[in-house]
Length: 352
Image (cartoon, rainbow, N blue to C red):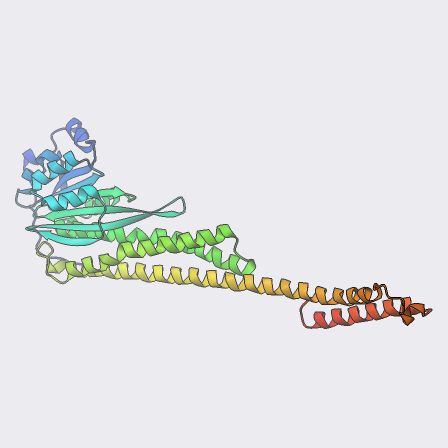
């Protein structure tokens, strides 16, 4: 997808090269800093300390890309000073309990997105806060989240794409976040299929019902976490955000489509789980009805000898049939015949 307005210099001045390997090692291992690099024409020319990021970002044709992982307030304060970030945005990135949103603070753009990972069969959520401005982009990760190192490494092999600027990097990060929802949903989909197969085989045990409930609740939380991303991506698409060039609108529109696809898949899985629960209830009720019928059938069969024995167990003196020579055998024959007829009728009707 071609995008114009390439704004980077073709090469870097000699003094812009990395100083030495030892200094670079120290920069990359600063507490909370995953990566801090400067790019020109889509090529990484230096790994820099955060304290120098502002000077590099102000150089014409350069972009600073910083990745932070659960930074402490002192590190965020340093980043704020380098890029003159708004205090409210920095406060949000520090607290890390935000819903997905897009806000503008002067010349800077602040984007919040929720991330998700499947940890021990449960969906764990995290947040990514992204600051975008002229010549810089800063991502701040909190909680469960896949590292964006793979995004950086992938696009560093495509300097032409990376040279499109900080708004393209924003697209790359959002696209990566949305794409990482799919492995979570695929794992849940496999488990849902197992539940479907189990439902028709036997009634669900308490543990199965609890797992089904947890899956539905996690899916609902995931849907609530990503639903606002549709609005965020639409705002990035409609050309009202000055930090994003109109030529990148198709890319953010593609991310919007991916978010909607994830929403549809979540809704589908939740419906399947609801149907599985209802089917389990129906199967359980069917088995309970079958047991009730069996018990009722045997109770009816046993009622015949019980009634006869009860009648002739009464201690009345004037019971003429007690004197019959074959009375005992006649009563046994009546009992056996009655029970046999009842058994045959219940068996024919499917109660036994």
